[in-house]
Amino acid sequence: ACLAILAGPAAAQQVGVTSAVNQAATGTPPRGQTRTLTIGEKVVHNERIDTDTRGLLQVLLADGTTFTVGPNSGLTIDSFVYDPDKGTAKITASLSKGVFRFIGGKTSKTPDGVQLETPIGTVGIRGGIVNLVFDPPNGTPPHIDLIYGSRVQLWRQGRRLVRLYSSGYSIYFGADGEPRVRRTPKEWLTILQGVLGGKSGQHGGASRLPTDALIEQSMLPQSNSGLPFPFDGFPFLFPSPGDPIQQQGSGDHNRTIGSCDYYYCD
Image (cartoon, rainbow, N blue to C red; front, side, top):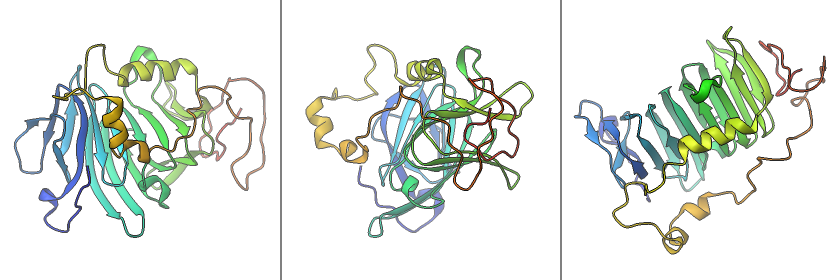
């Protein structure tokens, strides 16, 4: 999946490749015909990717960044610039609906390298792994989970609403539409893993079933940080840098934070 990100017409510029597909997933290039996506397909600049109720797709970019696109979801890569010599990359993408997991490569290690336009605002990411759920299953609220990484910021109309500074916390939206922050419930992670993990008997659209040896030969192990996945051991309460602690209670009963800059306010 070594991609040549070349200057040229936006409609023809390749930005990624499908590294796993459980159909049905489709891609619609600019001014092009909608096509059914299979594993190994090129994804071009401004191509709209959609999945149906059974669809599950992973898009791999040249810097190691991946988007896992869940069922009933929509993704467009608006802009992707990668400089392998400097080790920097920047991406702007539109996530119109659905469920996603973002795993950052060079993009999330580059200052202001990730900007995602979503139904709940503009999301900036610095660091590794983030879940984004806009159409939540089982009645859970829309939420953004910082699984691993340094920072998630949510902006709306040029105003920063909230930021997360530690893994194990989530931004979520209640019935009033206001953002709140809480420790990520384990059940949210379990539900999302079920949605994004595929079903028994599926193999990502591969004509040749993957093996451990094939994965070891691919670039995927090198793109992974190798750090543990923090399902357990939620962090203690700390303020974001430069901010005092404000505590008004205890436990997971959270208040509306508005413009509050703490990754956990209670």
